Length: 198
Image (cartoon, rainbow, N blue to C red; front, side):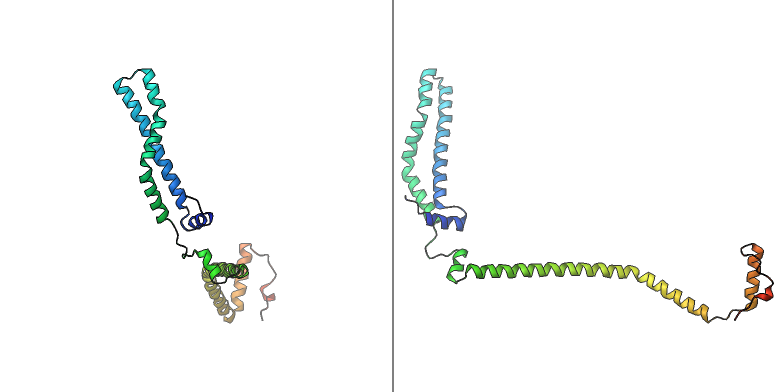
């Protein structure tokens, strides 16, 4: 049967194989099985019947010829099977592939390229949004970890305000300076009367 290259290409796009490939593989498989099974049968026959070497060699030499004759006897059945393969995996002329749909709708290469560019732009925008959200999450995590510091800072500010509002007794300050001098932390700065506080 003559192979139609356009039809075969169409089948390859649709099934990822063509009906002629299936037919060829089926023929090769049947021929291979006949050759192997006849060779094994011949060897078993020679061994079981203890056929001498010269007739055994003639038997072995005739295996290919016999296998071909057996295949020729199977040809009518093989032809029916191959016709079934061709019918089963044949694509009717009115069936369109996805690539054909672009042509029937009048899509040009420029339009397809524009649509692909829009898809890529949308993907890029999604990726940028994902990166932005990830950076926001990291910043929120940093703020959550700093909340304790903010609270401690507020406590310190409140404490400082309280201390600023308290009045300092000059005599308490003089006593504290004397204790520091006695302890040797500060040097004697002169008589206590020289201390002045506003």
